[in-house]
Length: 392
Image (cartoon, rainbow, N blue to C red; front, top):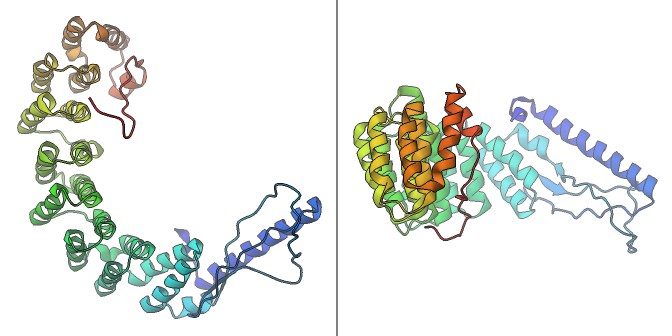
């Protein structure tokens, strides 16, 4: 946020100016409508240097017990007494104490500001970054989240000692699931993972008792794969494990996510991956996993092999949604060269006949870009699965 680059005195002055302006607007509305002023509940005074209390003064009309109907209330942050002085001498400990007060007072504006100050104070200092991880491990609820979000935005998060401590926290089965998940979410800031770290994340992802931590481990592996691929062109070590997770995890959401993650970097998959995805597309009991496998097959070094995989799986597929996905992604894999296969699918399943004619017309009109093909294609099949609905 831009506030990080402003002098501390300017920040405090800006906050005061906003409060004064909002107060003027409130008084003018009260004068014009003759309505009672909305009561402002005090957030509670701090005993540690920063107060988060509502503004009061002789010019503010007393609230009336009589209610004349709906009134517009303007939300206003509290008066942050002592904030300027805190900024002058900010340390991790003083910010930690102020953050605890802000959370206790339920002042999310002040808590957010203090989180950003923690990020600035940590900077690239690994020792300070490690201290935030320890505080997060000891705390719970909002404090854990805010400490790790502050660290996530600081350069120190990529220090090897800090990233190792975060991974250990993510692995810690004695820690709360929410704490483990937050630590794994913070790890997605890394530029790359070592093979050992990938295996450790995979172990979390495969743990049936890890709950949301398993899902976060999978997503973090995929997001760092994207980062590493964009920086170095390397993705194979990540994708190999994600594909295995997609095939063998007992958690449906984790399996779907593992297969989805390459979508954000779109590497061209090798022939071995085509064979594994083809098998998954034919045998997985969940419709959405079969669809995701068909989707992944569309980005391969060997489009002809992908077309054969779609042909080999089509006859044994009972879901019209997966059958349509096979036609759709065959065209993504090979463009107009896949139209004969699409015609074959339409002949076997008349429900796909109009889809085939639409695709044929689009290619005949000279459209070749896949995104334009997809955007101009009418939809005939109800294939969206609502959350919580049964899968085919």
